[in-house]
Image (cartoon, rainbow, N blue to C red; front, side, top):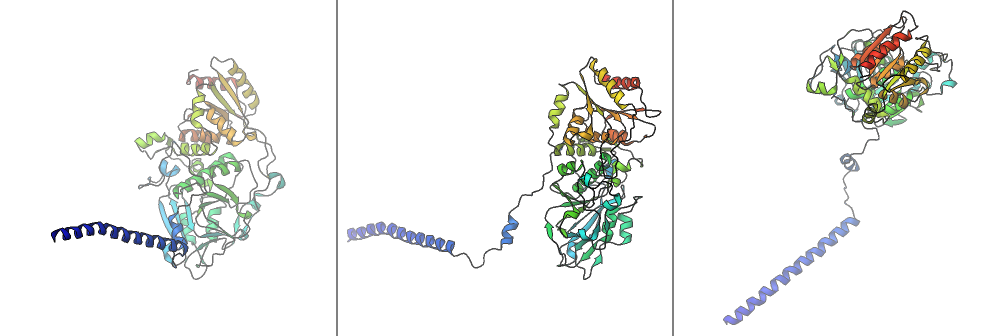
Length: 505
């Protein structure tokens, strides 16, 4: 009896694993059939595509910001005190004024301005913004120079009708975006005869949700820029700097697009706008009203520290970014060096390699020349001489350099007939930059920290532009002030010799 029970127990122990295996196999086959059926018959309530899209980060088509050795943060917890060096050149736009809040209604647009007490100007930005070229009176812009010779400046500058700029909001009717009191406080004319940014804001209207009718949408951040003296390097660099500061203050993740809200023809300097930013378009080139997910109104170049420094006295000297990281000082700046590196990086010039080659190939003495060229529709093509014997001075320096104990390379800086990349390379490779007072010397913003400057200044042009730029970049600066426009060759070579002695020659 006990043997029979033991035999039955043995059979059960053999049977149980087989039963368990069979049950597992049935469940596995059932689960496989379920998955197969689900793949052929999707759920009747799939996740909305918008939810899936939100989870996927689409790479921006805009150019990334380059790595800049002199870069210092623009957006931080503390703001520089008003009227300090950093307030002039950096983020002094510390007062944020919300004009239209996205939470004010069902519209999704917003608008705000960042005001600088120091510069007495504002950088304004908004979302769901519409620009209507049909409500802007100005020439088309972007034409070849030779096709618009004789066109007046008045035709090229914008005049706005009400509603030229619109922002989507919650207003039941089309109401002005800002009033005269706001403009007087945050966008004052400041002695500028035709303040186009103020005029654009004056034309702005808030429109109800659903009434922002557009022929196209620009999805990525875009700067709206109006230029005045667009063919002059000094004034254009003030525009570039204003656009760069606007991009940094609004904390844009990439380099923005640029829309010129003016009707100027194409100029050589447009090549640098295209290099610095992601794209460049003229407002009148749009076929109809254009809408922006994010638009930024860049202040006029006249409102930058580069321009205001010509008439306003403020304490500010250049310093290396490294020294300011170690010991912050609001009375010193590395912003112009940062900006110069931005220009150089935009043309893919290997600054480190150029610095190394300067020590191997001798000393470059760059003579920045003034020469005739056709600048704009109202220009004769003749450049006013500020050094009447410029050619003689250049030739004398060139002959003198050939007999010098050091290897000196005198570079003929005919910038008007060089590409921007060639001009920048010449500046970077120069150990000494010499020239008569003229816009070409504005390239000093991109000069390396060891560059020496010698400016020859006629009695008719005693202006501080390049002495200030040199000071703000901590460049060694020398000047020869002439009684007229004729320079003594002996005096020029004597001053140049003293500079070279400081370089070990």
